[in-house]
Length: 297
Image (tube, rainbow, N blue to C red; front, top):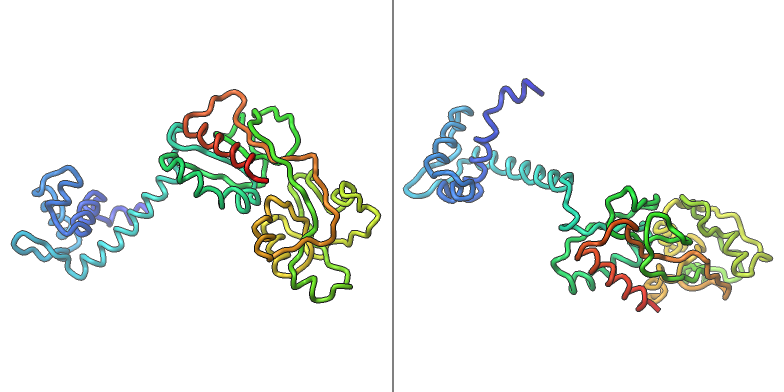
């Protein structure tokens, strides 16, 4: 790598050349970079000397890249663009500028993301970062402004602002039910990261259906999104959290199987750090979340 760097002209020359080629003007490149037009011209000429080829055809009051110049400019524009994206991704963002919200993959996919346009319309100036993971978030350690957590309080790391219960019942695709109504339906299982989350066996006890035979799942997933998609595809029956699969039910892609249902003691909770006051953007998002929790029937 050291040898490669040694064989390249100075990076500053490439930066100047890329600006001149992209803008089609030494004058405009000089204005963008905060240097003189003469300095741009000197740096471009030096780069041409270093490479041993012409990068621009110079005419009266205008410059035009040569074929080699266009090729080099396209490569540099792509490289600098990717570099900018990488720097933006790794650069720490002050909390006052970015609201960081965390939740599970399923809640983000099914419930939160479809509603985000409502928040964006009301607060277009609030910058939002959504972290979706099924691993637990600790508000005392992670730099998170708010979290939507499914579970049972109390929570040592946060203060609850709003809570929302859910109803759970088996669902499947209409095509699966129509295929053979009398046949035993295959179950789809979930490998939850938290063993206290709802399983088929615990659901049967809560729903008063523990006397019924619960078949061993022949198909298992470690993400609820994949399990729901498999059910939509007709692969089997999955436990459906009504708030998460509401759209699939409305659209008829999933239907209830039987009449048994359960309302677990666990709920969805909006939490903020216990020892840190939310900033204006985080407060606006939390206020909006509380309204959405109250509005979801």
